[in-house]
Length: 351
Ligand code: F1P
Image 1 (cartoon, rainbow, N blue to C red):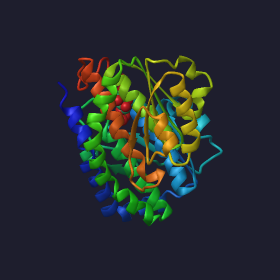
Image 2: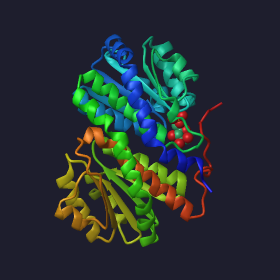
Image 3: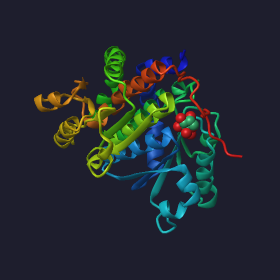
């Protein structure tokens, strides 16, 4: 039976407090990094879970700083660097993200940026003794978020939270830093409520298809939820921008589908309409949101209201707790061991 994966999932509020401490104690160092790395465009880079982290990070970084930010896979930087870092543009700051700091494509991307282009980059990792961090001009490390498990859970949310603090420091938004400081306590309350909810949802029907939807930074979270469900429970699992689901993918909606939507305050009205339509097509709907009005509540077969009074850009990582537990619970119910996911290793190194 899994123990490290579940333990790592449940430890997240405590590790998030460590991130808050790093952002406070290292604030001057982080500000110095930002001063030295003056840039007007940020490219977040990663693989697997760390790529989905890069997607969520780019969107929330742009929201907070009002600066341009993009996300890509490390393999794209390795194979098609000129499409992302054209020689004509020097104002882009790469942020390379990797729990292990040793993933081959990430190190290739680091080499391309540093040694072939003579540029510098931020490195975000859980391991300070890694090649990525040694190569980074601006290293940011969250050691207590590291994991024994193959699948990434607390490393994902903790490195994303650190990047949210980076954005808040960059934009001088003290109100956002105060909002982020409240997230660990909300996390403890969410964990108390969601382990039982995951069992209730999965006990209600035998789902064979899982879809996760979201917009803005919540799309990167939806992609990560898709990957967790796939990695841990070996299930058919897809992720889309919420309104994109109508443009073809909804053809597979039926009674075997659990459709989970990560509702943001910015897109709540449109996402409420979508949930009602998908419920009418036969999907079981699971809505995670800040607060549900009557219409959204009636369209939700299962509902988690976070009730934090925090803005979208501060509330992000709280959505991952129920989503990680949903995947974990489904895996164990199928007799699988999330600590030893099929076909996977903790780090992908190419010889
Ligand atoms: C990235 C990654 C993980 C995946 C598996 C293999 O690792 O692809 O997302 O779950 O563990 O490695 P990293 O570059 O963040 O260490």
